[in-house]
Image 1 (tube, one colour):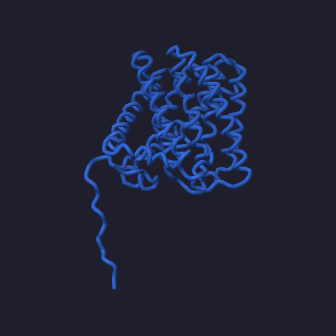
Image 2 (cartoon, rainbow, N blue to C red):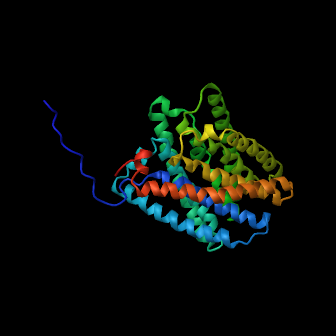
Image 3 (cartoon, rainbow, N blue to C red):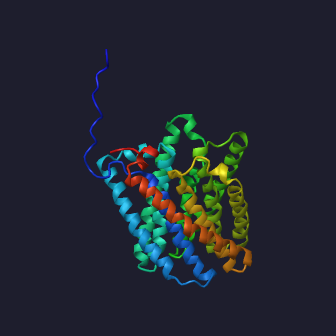
Length: 328
């Protein structure tokens, strides 16, 4: 006797019911690329227009994706908590709020008041996401509390805000955020290194290891903005071996082939380029400037490709399935 066949449930009507947060990490990377091109104006006497053009284009893309994800949240706000339960969702939502902080930098030349409002909203959104993540960690299963590189995005992510905050005069906020973020990043690095020494990282999750490069690079850039030159140099010297370690085993790192998690490669390399160019611009050596230029070339060639491939997966209806995105 055959079991009854009720068929496939009909797809819910409505646009953007399952918009995946995995769209946002490469957008974050594109914003980082715009910042890196702005640093190239000082390091290589490049014109400002490529950075401003990129800021404008990425801002439009970011706003479109915010509307797409917002439509999903408006239908059922609980999808945010559900998306935060999985690594791609947690990384994507963190990248969503952090992208807003970098968008604020691009708006400063247009209107400082608007930039300050956008930065405030982005910081507030990230704070809400942080509280939801902490609540999920405290109430969820113990295995969900394992430290991952994504923790940098959630718990150290506020360090992105001084990039626009310092030019806007948020000196006290930026100083406090810098020292707190440095302490948290060091704790995550130490814990991750201890875990890595005990067990291997599953192949599908290895691209997330690239996120470890981002805090060292961004902390170094913010240190320069705050005038901590020696500390910035030390963070730059930390970022270089992290990048070398990632590049030393490319087959191992990319063993599972392309996936939406490749978005984790985008913003760290852009942040690294910015730091190296800034160090070269303040007279710390031609080597830093060259490293920054090489990283800028790699970021310019690679980040748009990752963004395009992720958007293609979304267009084919595969991105939400591959990243286990919640549905409204």
